[in-house]
Structure formats: C-alpha cells, structure tokens
Length: 337
Image (spheres, rainbow, N blue to C red):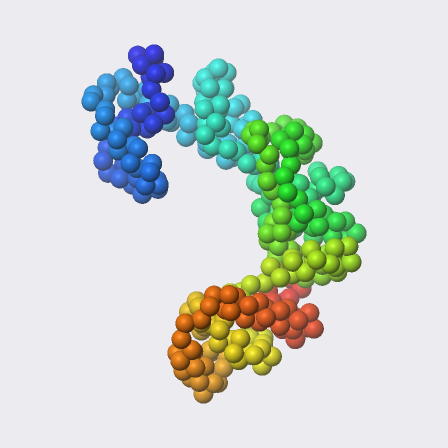
C-alpha cells in the first residue's frame, strides 16, 4: 500500500483528502482556491473510483504531519520544526515532511526574526555594517524595522535607509550567511533564485512608522547624498487617500491652499471616506457648490486626476514641513497637548 501512495501525485492525494473530508468541508476549502485549482481538483476527484480506508488514513496522517510542520515553522522557523518533528516522527520521516513542505511553500528568509522583539534584533545587528543592517530590515515587518531604524545612531540611519531604498536583489549565499550571523541556532531555507527585497516601497513603509525626528534626520541626509532618491521617497510617503488620517483643522488649512479645480478633479474618483473628510471641513455652501460642479464636470482622464492628486500631496507636504498641518506618524512626537 505504501508503494501505491508513493505513486500518487500531490494533486491526486489532494483529491483523496477532499473526498475523505466530505462535501461540506471540501466546499469551504474550495472558497480559498483559484478557479484553475478548483477545475484540476474536480477532475481528479471525478477520476477517483474507489478509495481504500487504509489509503484515507495514510493521506490524512500525511496531511496532519504537514499541518504540524507548518505550525511549528510559524512558531519558530524550520530548525525548530525539524527538531520537534524528529522527536515525534523520527529523523528520516521529519526530514521528508520538511522537504516536502518547503518545496511547495517558499519560506521567507529571516522568518524567525519577524517574531522577535525589535530590541533583541537590534542587539544582534547594531554593530554590523550598514549593508547588513539594511538587508535584515528589508525582510522584517515594517513596524519592527521602524523601531530598529529609530534606535540606530543618527549618522547611520540615513545610510541604512538609502541602502534599503536602492537594494535590488541579493544572492541566496549572502542571505544565508547573514541569517547565520543573526541567529546561529536558526536558519531559513532559501530558493536558488535571487531573492528580491528592499526598494523604495520598503523604505517608505519603514519611514512611515518611525518618529518624525528620525524621518527628518534621514530625509535631510538623503537630500544631500542622493536628492533624486530623497524626492522619490517623499513623494510616496503620503498618498492622497491618507487625507482621512489628518485632523479636521489641518484639512481646513489644506483646503485654503489648494486649487479648487485640482480638488474637484482629485475627488472625482476618490472614495466616499475621502470625500466625507473633505466636505465636512467645508462650509455648507462651499460643499454644495463643489458637488454641483463635480456633477457637471463629466468624464475626466485618469492621468489628470492623478496629476491633481500629486499637486495636492505636494501642497500637504509643504504645509507639513512648515509645521502648519500635522500628519500622524509612528512615535509620540506628534501628540498634541
């Protein structure tokens, strides 16, 4: 019977598993699958003529082991999962389960570190060079990276931020080496393809979580080192939809400085939440006039809308830099008392 099971493909085993679980459970599983996956599994299920009870038990057991392995990986990484499974299943069986799981589920590098306290990670990496720190931060949760970046010496913050922003791809060998330095007892499986991490969006998410002082220090330094990069980061740090996170007094100040035509264009495709935030900070007469003019505006080009939103964001950033409006950030320096 073991040979029969070994001869089955993963898709065939999945079909037998769904048959074993029954129609109600299988229907719930199908809700989480793509259409092509549903079609393929449906064909496999249709081709199954008879399933022996021993086969069902074998596949259920295999599925249970994979679920356990995945849970252990999420708790403490692959090495932790392998250690626990070896005690339960034996070395060879544990290795087989882990290999089968990681062959289909690419475990993201530094998975173990994303469950650690930022201060603990900081202790490991604060004395490393800026490139190594940038690599680690680009793989962590943005909240973790923001806390760590804020705690680095000021002369190092901008350099690390710049390296994250311009980071493209890093070889698996380098990633593995840095993982071992960070935590020798834990390691993650990396694919043989080059892994892409970092980039503009990565550093924007991190900077959006740091305190205002850290953000200004980094951006001021970047404006000297790499003005184009600094401008690109600043453009992405606040988007038009983020207006909903600004306090009413600041929105009223913004409305006074932006062109009405730009605001009408920007609101043309804005969400109801954004529109409500703007209209409730206008006088009743002004909001009614705006709504009427927007109705008569007719179709508009998306490019025109995006350009109008960009100009509004630029105005907001200018007002923020002059201290006339406040945009909520991580940290506590924006608390108003």
